[in-house]
Image 1: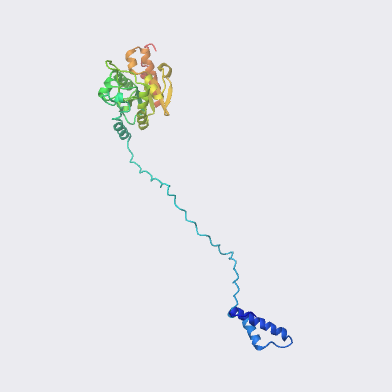
Image 2 (image 1 turned 90 degrees about the horizontal axis):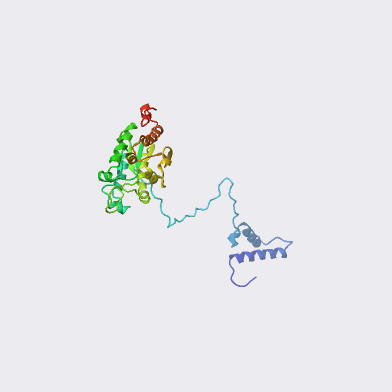
Amino acid sequence: MLAGPMNSFDQAVSVVYDALSAIRTNASGPLPRADRAALERLASAPEAAGAPAPAPEAKLPSRSQPEPQPAPIPVRADASAKPAAPEPAAEPSQSQAERLEALRQRFAECGKCPNLAGTRTHVVFGVGNPEARLMFVGEAPGADEDREGEPFVGRAGQLLTKIIQAMGYERSDVYIANVLKCRPDMPPGETGNRKPRPDEMATCLPYLIEQIEIIRPRCLVALGATAMEGLLGEPAVMRQVRGRWHKFRDIPLMATYHPAYLLRNQSMAEKRKVWEDMLLVLEKLGDPISAKQRGYFLPKSQ
Protein backbone atom coordinates (compact mmCIF):
# COMPACT_ATOMS: atom_id res chain seq x y z
CA MET A 1 0.00 0.00 0.00
CA LEU A 2 1.10 3.62 -0.61
CA ALA A 3 2.32 5.56 2.45
CA GLY A 4 0.81 8.83 3.44
CA PRO A 5 -2.66 10.05 4.47
CA MET A 6 -5.61 8.28 2.90
CA ASN A 7 -9.05 9.62 2.06
CA SER A 8 -12.27 7.64 2.27
CA PHE A 9 -12.03 6.38 -1.26
CA ASP A 10 -8.46 5.16 -0.73
CA GLN A 11 -9.56 3.42 2.48
CA ALA A 12 -12.37 1.62 0.64
CA VAL A 13 -9.94 0.43 -2.01
CA SER A 14 -7.54 -0.78 0.73
CA VAL A 15 -10.33 -2.77 2.38
CA VAL A 16 -11.26 -4.41 -0.91
CA TYR A 17 -7.62 -5.18 -1.65
CA ASP A 18 -7.08 -6.75 1.81
CA ALA A 19 -10.29 -8.74 1.45
CA LEU A 20 -9.26 -10.12 -1.93
CA SER A 21 -5.83 -11.00 -0.55
CA ALA A 22 -7.48 -12.89 2.29
CA ILE A 23 -9.67 -14.78 -0.20
CA ARG A 24 -6.58 -15.87 -2.13
CA THR A 25 -4.80 -16.88 1.07
CA ASN A 26 -7.75 -18.77 2.58
CA ALA A 27 -9.33 -20.07 -0.54
CA SER A 28 -10.41 -23.18 1.27
CA GLY A 29 -11.71 -21.40 4.38
CA PRO A 30 -14.38 -18.85 5.18
CA LEU A 31 -13.64 -15.11 4.81
CA PRO A 32 -12.95 -13.40 8.14
CA ARG A 33 -15.99 -11.61 9.54
CA ALA A 34 -14.43 -8.13 9.45
CA ASP A 35 -13.48 -8.46 5.82
CA ARG A 36 -16.86 -9.90 4.86
CA ALA A 37 -18.67 -7.02 6.57
CA ALA A 38 -16.51 -4.45 4.77
CA LEU A 39 -17.32 -6.01 1.40
CA GLU A 40 -21.04 -6.02 2.14
CA ARG A 41 -21.00 -2.30 3.08
CA LEU A 42 -19.10 -1.44 -0.08
CA ALA A 43 -21.53 -3.40 -2.31
CA SER A 44 -24.68 -2.01 -0.72
CA ALA A 45 -23.66 1.69 -0.69
CA PRO A 46 -20.40 2.38 -2.46
CA GLU A 47 -20.82 6.12 -2.10
CA ALA A 48 -20.95 5.73 1.64
CA ALA A 49 -17.39 4.40 1.52
CA GLY A 50 -16.25 7.33 -0.58
CA ALA A 51 -16.64 5.77 -4.05
CA PRO A 52 -18.02 8.11 -6.73
CA ALA A 53 -21.71 7.48 -7.53
CA PRO A 54 -22.48 6.33 -11.07
CA ALA A 55 -23.89 9.01 -13.38
CA PRO A 56 -27.68 8.82 -13.72
CA GLU A 57 -28.85 7.22 -16.93
CA ALA A 58 -29.90 9.76 -19.55
CA LYS A 59 -33.58 9.52 -20.43
CA LEU A 60 -34.77 9.89 -24.03
CA PRO A 61 -37.59 12.33 -24.59
CA SER A 62 -41.04 10.85 -24.87
CA ARG A 63 -42.56 10.81 -28.41
CA SER A 64 -45.84 12.05 -26.97
CA GLN A 65 -44.24 15.25 -25.71
CA PRO A 66 -42.92 17.92 -28.13
CA GLU A 67 -39.27 18.64 -27.95
CA PRO A 68 -38.50 21.96 -26.31
CA GLN A 69 -37.94 24.71 -28.88
CA PRO A 70 -35.15 27.24 -28.50
CA ALA A 71 -36.20 30.66 -27.48
CA PRO A 72 -36.56 33.04 -30.44
CA ILE A 73 -33.66 35.35 -31.05
CA PRO A 74 -34.85 38.93 -30.66
CA VAL A 75 -34.49 40.96 -33.86
CA ARG A 76 -33.02 44.37 -33.45
CA ALA A 77 -35.00 47.15 -35.03
CA ASP A 78 -33.22 48.84 -37.91
CA ALA A 79 -32.44 52.30 -36.69
CA SER A 80 -32.41 53.61 -40.24
CA ALA A 81 -35.86 52.26 -41.09
CA LYS A 82 -38.53 54.94 -41.18
CA PRO A 83 -41.93 54.28 -39.63
CA ALA A 84 -44.78 53.83 -42.07
CA ALA A 85 -46.47 57.07 -42.91
CA PRO A 86 -50.03 57.29 -41.60
CA GLU A 87 -52.83 57.13 -44.12
CA PRO A 88 -53.92 60.66 -45.06
CA ALA A 89 -57.28 61.61 -43.73
CA ALA A 90 -59.97 61.56 -46.37
CA GLU A 91 -60.94 65.04 -47.41
CA PRO A 92 -64.61 65.87 -47.36
CA SER A 93 -66.16 65.53 -50.79
CA GLN A 94 -66.42 68.74 -52.79
CA SER A 95 -68.77 69.57 -55.60
CA GLN A 96 -67.44 70.25 -59.06
CA ALA A 97 -68.29 73.94 -58.62
CA GLU A 98 -66.25 74.08 -55.39
CA ARG A 99 -63.31 72.33 -57.01
CA LEU A 100 -63.38 74.72 -59.96
CA GLU A 101 -63.50 77.71 -57.63
CA ALA A 102 -60.52 76.37 -55.67
CA LEU A 103 -58.62 75.94 -58.93
CA ARG A 104 -59.56 79.46 -60.05
CA GLN A 105 -58.27 80.97 -56.79
CA ARG A 106 -55.05 78.99 -57.04
CA PHE A 107 -54.55 80.15 -60.62
CA ALA A 108 -55.49 83.81 -60.08
CA GLU A 109 -51.95 84.89 -59.16
CA CYS A 110 -50.11 82.75 -61.71
CA GLY A 111 -46.82 84.29 -62.84
CA LYS A 112 -45.32 81.46 -64.88
CA CYS A 113 -45.27 83.72 -67.96
CA PRO A 114 -43.89 87.04 -66.67
CA ASN A 115 -44.62 88.84 -69.95
CA LEU A 116 -48.31 87.90 -69.76
CA ALA A 117 -48.66 88.45 -66.01
CA GLY A 118 -47.19 91.92 -66.39
CA THR A 119 -49.62 93.11 -69.06
CA ARG A 120 -52.91 91.33 -68.31
CA THR A 121 -55.89 92.96 -66.68
CA HIS A 122 -57.60 89.71 -65.61
CA VAL A 123 -56.89 86.01 -65.66
CA VAL A 124 -59.68 84.68 -67.89
CA PHE A 125 -60.39 81.36 -66.19
CA GLY A 126 -63.64 80.03 -67.68
CA VAL A 127 -67.39 80.29 -67.40
CA GLY A 128 -70.43 78.05 -67.50
CA ASN A 129 -71.89 74.90 -65.99
CA PRO A 130 -69.40 72.97 -63.80
CA GLU A 131 -71.24 69.78 -64.75
CA ALA A 132 -71.58 70.55 -68.46
CA ARG A 133 -71.88 67.73 -70.97
CA LEU A 134 -70.35 69.97 -73.66
CA MET A 135 -67.24 72.15 -73.36
CA PHE A 136 -65.89 74.68 -75.88
CA VAL A 137 -62.18 75.53 -75.90
CA GLY A 138 -60.71 78.58 -77.63
CA GLU A 139 -57.13 79.71 -78.02
CA ALA A 140 -56.69 82.85 -75.84
CA PRO A 141 -58.54 85.91 -74.52
CA GLY A 142 -58.77 89.05 -76.62
CA ALA A 143 -59.00 92.65 -75.49
CA ASP A 144 -62.68 92.37 -74.54
CA GLU A 145 -62.13 89.17 -72.56
CA ASP A 146 -59.11 90.62 -70.76
CA ARG A 147 -61.19 93.63 -69.73
CA GLU A 148 -64.24 91.59 -68.62
CA GLY A 149 -62.41 88.57 -67.20
CA GLU A 150 -64.73 86.18 -69.10
CA PRO A 151 -64.06 84.21 -72.29
CA PHE A 152 -65.87 84.91 -75.57
CA VAL A 153 -67.69 88.15 -74.71
CA GLY A 154 -66.76 90.16 -77.81
CA ARG A 155 -68.26 89.85 -81.29
CA ALA A 156 -66.89 86.33 -81.74
CA GLY A 157 -68.35 85.39 -78.38
CA GLN A 158 -71.75 86.70 -79.34
CA LEU A 159 -71.69 84.55 -82.47
CA LEU A 160 -70.67 81.52 -80.39
CA THR A 161 -73.67 82.14 -78.14
CA LYS A 162 -75.96 82.05 -81.18
CA ILE A 163 -74.43 78.74 -82.31
CA ILE A 164 -74.96 77.27 -78.81
CA GLN A 165 -78.59 78.38 -78.81
CA ALA A 166 -79.17 76.92 -82.30
CA MET A 167 -77.98 73.59 -80.86
CA GLY A 168 -80.76 73.77 -78.27
CA TYR A 169 -78.63 74.95 -75.31
CA GLU A 170 -78.10 78.13 -73.39
CA ARG A 171 -74.68 79.56 -72.73
CA SER A 172 -75.08 78.67 -69.05
CA ASP A 173 -75.62 75.00 -69.99
CA VAL A 174 -72.15 74.51 -71.47
CA TYR A 175 -68.65 75.41 -70.27
CA ILE A 176 -66.36 77.79 -72.18
CA ALA A 177 -62.62 78.23 -71.61
CA ASN A 178 -59.37 78.93 -73.45
CA VAL A 179 -56.08 77.08 -73.65
CA LEU A 180 -54.24 80.28 -72.67
CA LYS A 181 -55.77 82.10 -69.71
CA CYS A 182 -54.07 85.48 -70.21
CA ARG A 183 -54.27 87.81 -73.18
CA PRO A 184 -51.07 87.59 -75.27
CA ASP A 185 -49.05 90.75 -74.84
CA MET A 186 -48.57 93.00 -77.86
CA PRO A 187 -45.33 94.68 -78.96
CA PRO A 188 -45.15 98.37 -78.03
CA GLY A 189 -47.12 100.55 -80.39
CA GLU A 190 -49.17 97.69 -81.85
CA THR A 191 -52.86 97.02 -81.30
CA GLY A 192 -55.13 94.05 -81.81
CA ASN A 193 -54.57 90.45 -80.73
CA ARG A 194 -51.66 88.16 -81.49
CA LYS A 195 -51.61 84.39 -81.76
CA PRO A 196 -50.36 82.69 -78.56
CA ARG A 197 -47.02 80.95 -78.87
CA PRO A 198 -46.77 77.14 -78.46
CA ASP A 199 -44.63 77.52 -75.32
CA GLU A 200 -47.20 79.83 -73.74
CA MET A 201 -50.01 77.38 -74.42
CA ALA A 202 -47.93 74.44 -73.16
CA THR A 203 -47.27 76.30 -69.88
CA CYS A 204 -50.98 76.99 -69.37
CA LEU A 205 -52.32 73.64 -70.60
CA PRO A 206 -52.14 71.87 -67.18
CA TYR A 207 -54.76 74.29 -65.81
CA LEU A 208 -57.09 73.53 -68.69
CA ILE A 209 -56.55 69.81 -68.12
CA GLU A 210 -57.55 70.23 -64.48
CA GLN A 211 -60.70 72.06 -65.57
CA ILE A 212 -61.58 69.26 -67.97
CA GLU A 213 -60.93 66.58 -65.35
CA ILE A 214 -63.22 68.36 -62.88
CA ILE A 215 -66.04 69.02 -65.35
CA ARG A 216 -65.76 65.66 -67.14
CA PRO A 217 -67.64 66.74 -70.29
CA ARG A 218 -68.86 64.12 -72.72
CA CYS A 219 -67.62 66.14 -75.72
CA LEU A 220 -65.02 68.82 -76.38
CA VAL A 221 -65.12 71.34 -79.23
CA ALA A 222 -61.89 73.06 -80.24
CA LEU A 223 -62.62 76.48 -81.75
CA GLY A 224 -59.98 77.10 -84.37
CA ALA A 225 -56.69 75.56 -85.48
CA THR A 226 -54.69 77.29 -82.72
CA ALA A 227 -56.88 75.79 -80.00
CA MET A 228 -56.47 72.39 -81.64
CA GLU A 229 -52.71 72.90 -81.67
CA GLY A 230 -52.72 73.87 -78.01
CA LEU A 231 -54.64 70.73 -77.05
CA LEU A 232 -52.72 68.22 -79.18
CA GLY A 233 -49.31 69.88 -79.12
CA GLU A 234 -48.82 69.95 -82.90
CA PRO A 235 -49.83 72.30 -85.73
CA ALA A 236 -53.27 71.69 -87.18
CA VAL A 237 -54.87 72.67 -90.50
CA MET A 238 -58.58 73.17 -89.97
CA ARG A 239 -59.74 71.88 -93.33
CA GLN A 240 -57.90 68.63 -92.54
CA VAL A 241 -58.98 68.08 -88.92
CA ARG A 242 -62.59 69.32 -88.87
CA GLY A 243 -65.57 67.06 -89.59
CA ARG A 244 -64.16 63.98 -87.82
CA TRP A 245 -63.61 62.88 -84.25
CA HIS A 246 -60.36 63.09 -82.35
CA LYS A 247 -59.49 62.25 -78.74
CA PHE A 248 -58.19 64.37 -75.90
CA ARG A 249 -57.54 62.38 -72.71
CA ASP A 250 -60.14 59.81 -73.85
CA ILE A 251 -62.80 62.50 -74.43
CA PRO A 252 -64.24 62.85 -77.96
CA LEU A 253 -62.87 66.03 -79.51
CA MET A 254 -64.37 67.86 -82.49
CA ALA A 255 -62.53 70.69 -84.22
CA THR A 256 -64.35 73.47 -86.03
CA TYR A 257 -63.67 76.98 -87.27
CA HIS A 258 -63.33 79.78 -84.73
CA PRO A 259 -66.34 82.15 -84.66
CA ALA A 260 -63.98 84.97 -85.62
CA TYR A 261 -63.36 83.14 -88.89
CA LEU A 262 -67.07 83.21 -89.67
CA LEU A 263 -67.13 86.96 -89.00
CA ARG A 264 -64.54 87.34 -91.74
CA ASN A 265 -66.13 84.74 -94.04
CA GLN A 266 -69.88 85.28 -94.17
CA SER A 267 -70.67 82.75 -96.92
CA MET A 268 -73.39 80.19 -96.30
CA ALA A 269 -70.98 77.41 -97.30
CA GLU A 270 -68.53 78.24 -94.48
CA LYS A 271 -71.32 78.61 -91.94
CA ARG A 272 -72.69 75.23 -93.04
CA LYS A 273 -69.30 73.59 -92.39
CA VAL A 274 -69.38 74.76 -88.79
CA TRP A 275 -72.98 73.70 -88.41
CA GLU A 276 -72.26 70.21 -89.80
CA ASP A 277 -69.59 69.86 -87.12
CA MET A 278 -72.17 70.85 -84.49
CA LEU A 279 -74.64 68.27 -85.83
CA LEU A 280 -71.99 65.61 -85.29
CA VAL A 281 -71.60 66.86 -81.71
CA LEU A 282 -75.36 66.64 -81.10
CA GLU A 283 -75.37 63.09 -82.44
CA LYS A 284 -72.46 62.13 -80.19
CA LEU A 285 -74.31 63.56 -77.18
CA GLY A 286 -77.45 61.64 -78.14
CA ASP A 287 -79.55 64.80 -78.43
CA PRO A 288 -82.57 64.86 -80.77
CA ILE A 289 -82.07 66.83 -83.98
CA SER A 290 -85.06 68.42 -85.65
CA ALA A 291 -85.60 68.73 -89.39
CA LYS A 292 -85.25 72.47 -89.00
CA GLN A 293 -81.86 72.09 -87.38
CA ARG A 294 -80.68 69.76 -90.12
CA GLY A 295 -81.69 72.34 -92.72
CA TYR A 296 -79.74 75.29 -91.31
CA PHE A 297 -77.52 77.08 -93.89
CA LEU A 298 -78.59 74.85 -96.77
CA PRO A 299 -79.71 76.33 -100.11
CA LYS A 300 -83.47 76.81 -100.22
CA SER A 301 -83.85 74.24 -103.00
CA GLN A 302 -82.60 71.36 -100.72
